[in-house]
Length: 631
Ligand code: WT7
Image (cartoon, rainbow, N blue to C red):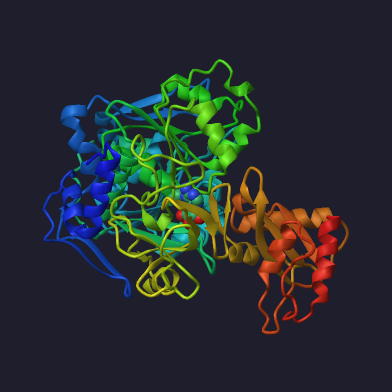
């Protein structure tokens, strides 16, 4: 299943397009099934209705755990590096992980969970997070992991959308020199979550927490009441595996749904190939398991391939900006998969943090989450890879389940800032505004995918129509990614960024409408408009234009009130970098905010704002330009 030459890539690609069912049927043979499929694929993009490996039965945890026991049971599955470098790291072999997953799966059952129930997980980056995820999959419960940076309200919205029955959390989390009171946040969230019956709390930071009788139980107590034998639930290939919420250009975040069979095949296949993973190597993905990158490339992809996956609790700059390099040296990391924002942030500290660090174990480097600028690419290549480690710039999305366009390490010739070529099975096309295909090379357009792949989303939880509208209705018979893209003379793809109202801030996906709604919840705000602007480290910063007519006292304090409101409503990750108070917003006569103009102003442009004659009140533009210049 592993591609080892460019010729083989080309041959596999050709086969995957000409005979997709045969191609994926063969790939799927590399996994363990309880019962085979009777049909590899049936699909239409209008429903959409997508089914992979129909009729097949499996449990993904048998692929991630049980099947490695006989040959690799004593091999490390997870290495955990804590936030505090003074604290010992932890290694869990496949045997140990299997045992703990089974034990915790029994805890879930003991607390009333069964196949099909939704379980919300809000935890720090500790091995128990991976254990919780896998334990859900073991019993056929659907996990919905919520990133530890989201607010109580965001959690409550997600819990209620999926009608979760259980919550798994910890007392708190460490993040650099900060402590985050996870259980407090969950307590606030659960005030408005009638479906939640039980909350399982892991002791981690051991900060005082309230434990509600009948609802809250300690992880450590519960595991004493059960044994470590838990037969995996037999799942249909198209049964739900998980829900993961992600932001779009409108409304509340959507619950992207992934199913058991196709997701497993796609995460495993892409992991093995893109990183050219070799047995015994240590693989380190710096993402949080709360995002899709962590689901697919910390947990399911690596474990399905019997790999050693390093879980890091901390942040790149704590206690010093050498931390990543210390972790690489300490654990002899072979593959480092991280985000451009982390690279740019570490770059800004210069070479000093690298002095004396042994990075010679590094063989493959990866980038994900946002376009990587050439400067960051070269720094990563020269300073970290020493010019010898291929960089895989992996483009994909929560909705795609796994990597879509990317070099294959040691196989695909790379080019700075290019995601290069589609993986086998992926058929990208560029279209113009009207949905006409833009053929040939040296062209740009909106990136769509014209044929299904096993890891694609199946629906948005509880609202199939929304899935159809968001991804399959912009252009007929195509999956629309929301990204703009260039295809150069060599046929290489470069993702240029979102073409919709979605921001990418430090690799986190944030909808402008969501931030606006949060700002508008502040009592003094009449209206607001949010746009992105180029930011040296974060990729994009958040710029908020706010109408706030009756301000009492201090402008700076009022700005902070607005940031606090956004933190409360969404979470600190969505806090605007700049807030500008204005008396009006540039609107068309039909009342639509012209973001194009605001984007230019946010970028520092004062002339060349394009046609503003259709504005209801063109004067407002001059006023905004002037106050932006003064701010
Ligand atoms: C959006 C998806 C699944 C990866 C983590 C983010 C942007 C992602 C790249 C890349 C340029 C990229 C796109 C995409 N993006 N990877 N290598 N080059 N842009 O997942 O939160 O679902 O966001 O991230 O804009 O649409 P996500």
